[in-house]
Amino acid sequence: MNFNLPDETKMIQDTVRRFVDNELIPLEQEFPDRANSADLPDDIQGPLIKKVEQLGLAAMDAPE
Image (cartoon, rainbow, N blue to C red; front, side, top):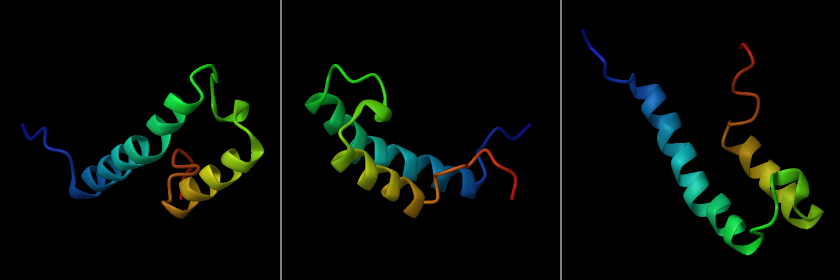
């Protein structure tokens, strides 16, 4: 049985990992008391959402 992830899934996994490492973890350190992105200031939340959309990560659970 082959348990390897397909290449497309590996690419998504890598993209999400880099986004979390580069964008979310620094914000978590800057705003440790914020529970989610809705609690972030608008000048940070807006660009963050745009980056998610640009990476193709928005609405990933929606059918094509």
